[in-house]
Every structure is written in structure tokens, then in C-alpha cells.
Image 1 (cartoon, protein in one colour):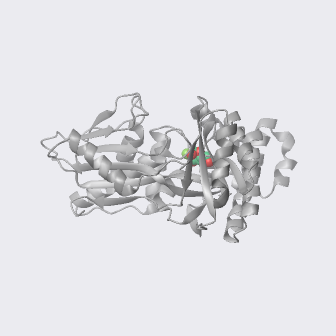
Image 2 (cartoon, helix red, strand yellow):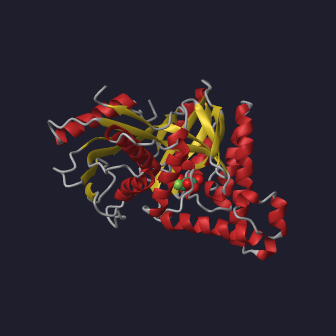
Image 3 (cartoon, rainbow, N blue to C red):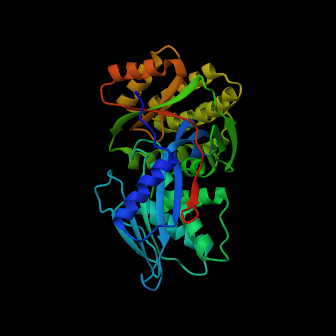
Length: 409
Ligand code: GAF
């Protein structure tokens, strides 16, 4: 098989349970929480412009296993450990629940977890704070543009919901949308990435066999069936991570806001048409103009893409994917040589409907819509032509976050 094998949730849970038991013998965990990563089919860099995005959850994600601890014997401490091999910083941290929970300078991964913990406590105001121990594992490639960070945040929030359901009588669960908003805020404030809502929303709300058309202006969505046994969503990881990412993302957010301000709108979503931008072209620098042109056209492409998929018009959807890639490459300038090469190689194969970079950019993955019968050919062509070493995933649209009471399991 040319694509990577995806472990089932059961295998993932069994492996993590084994690691937990090795680390903490005779101390059985009680809660298991999972949240998926996502692949965005179209609608890139428009969530923070209040636009439409069209992602689906993938069967890779983050799993957290753990248990409540006795507050008094543990001095109100929480013990948090990651099993990720991708982090070269310390793999465990402690949090004191009697103190204010502030962000970590290091390890960086800790902020995705403690950010959610801090905001969860602030939002739900439980009658008492509960100590716990957790270990975290993720199957989403880090820095691959498949939203590993949101999967950690949402898995953490799901873990906390179950922890507090068990330990507090008055605990009021969060709505799915509020949960996504909380996790998004944790990323913005603790990890300090000014991201939009797409990744956390998908991890909370996605449904198996459906893609999600999310309207990021009012945080509502429509699940669109995406099960066709003849069509495959092929995700190709370029396995490159360029250094540029963090600062450049924030800069793109700022460029879009600048354009919206010049046009007299709160967000670029409010721009009625590309003509409105053209009329104001001499009021902005060419860079700001190009950023705005990407966002405005990408929002329209995403709405059109969802319609095409509803009509099973894969040719039209594929055409929009190529346009999206070109706009991200030329106007938004977030692609890179490797991603461009992957898209062009896919494009050369008969049976490929469309292909584009997916996620924040500067490395990471492409997403390709391809006839099932042409998948092997597509993988082969990329393997032969790509200048690096790529990994391949065939993804089915998956469910959002879930949790299990391990005691009942
Ligand atoms: C990252 C962000 F977290 C998302 O909010 C989104 O902006 C995406 O990049 C680009 O579409 O995943």
C-alpha cells in the first residue's frame, strides 16, 4: 500500500493505555478524550476575514488519557505529559491550580494545553478545581498544516468536560460552538497565534462522511455529504517545514485587516465584489491589494465549491481548487516550491480533478481530489517527480471530538 496506514481509534487508545500503565503502574486512568485534525478542501486564509471555509475532519488526531487526582495529597497540582517525539523541549509540566495559570515560555506545546485549562476554568467556574494527571499523544504530523494544535486544544477541552462532569454536580457543559471559540481563544492568547475559528470548529463539530461549510462570520455551518466510493481525498505531506510560518501568518492577518480598513469594512467578507476592490486599488499598496484580492476571490470560490460538491460536480470543484492554489501562490504568497511542485505533478495525472496547498502554508500538505482508480498512478507520479520525500494519506471525512469513560469501557 502506497499511503500511510491510519490507526483506528481503538488501536490508538490501546497503545496509549499501554504507555500510561507502563509509566504509572497500578494507577488506572478513567478518561479518554480524542479530537481530530482537519484538512481544508477550499477556503484558505479566509476564516479570520469572516469568510467561508470548507474543511473536513481526518482520522488522525490527538488523544488524551488521564484521571482525577486527590487534591489534598497532590497539593492541587496537575501533571501533564506529552509522548510526542516531535518536541525537543521538556515533555512534562506541572500546573498549580491555586495560582493563576499563565503562559509558558517553554515548552511551547504546553500553551495549547494550559491555555485551554485556564480559559475553561474561567468560563465554567467550577465549584472546586480538580487536580489531574494526563498523557497526550498525537497522530497528526506536527507542522503539516493538518491542525495538530487545534486537535490538542479540543481534546483537552473534551477531557476537562468529562473530568468536571464526574467531579462537580453543578457542571454545565459548553455548547459545541462555545467550546470551539474557547479553544480558538486559547490559541490566540496562550500560543499567541492570531488564528481564525476553522480548525477548532472542525474538531468540535465535524461529522463522518461530510465536509463542513463554515460561515466564519456567525460561526454556523452546514454539513455537506462527501461520500463517493469513486472519489478519494488524497493528502500529500511535502515533509518540509519552513521557518517563516509564525510571523508570516500574523502578517497576513494584518495585511487583510489593513485592506478591510482602507475599504471601510470591518472584515473583507463585507466587500461586495472584486470591482469594489478595483475601484480602491490606488488607495493601497500592491501587496495589500493582492492580499485582499486573494481573500475576496477565495471566499467566492468556497461558496461555489460547496455548491459544486452538492451537485457532484467534481470537475468544477477541481477547477476551483487549482484557482485557489494559484491565488495562494501568487497573491497571498504563502506557498513554496515544494507545494507548487506537488500540485503540478498531481495535475499531470489523468483522473485528478484538482489539487492545492492546504492549511497555513510554507510547507505542510497539499490536498488532491482524485478518482479512486487513479490514486495509485497519482502517488507514483509524485513519488517519481517530487524533489523531496513525500508521505501520502487517503482520508475519509471523520467525526469531531469524542470521549470515553474508561471505567465503563
Ligand atoms: C491555520 C489557522 F489556524 C486557521 O485558522 C486558518 O487561518 C488556516 O491556517 C489558513 O486557512 O490553520
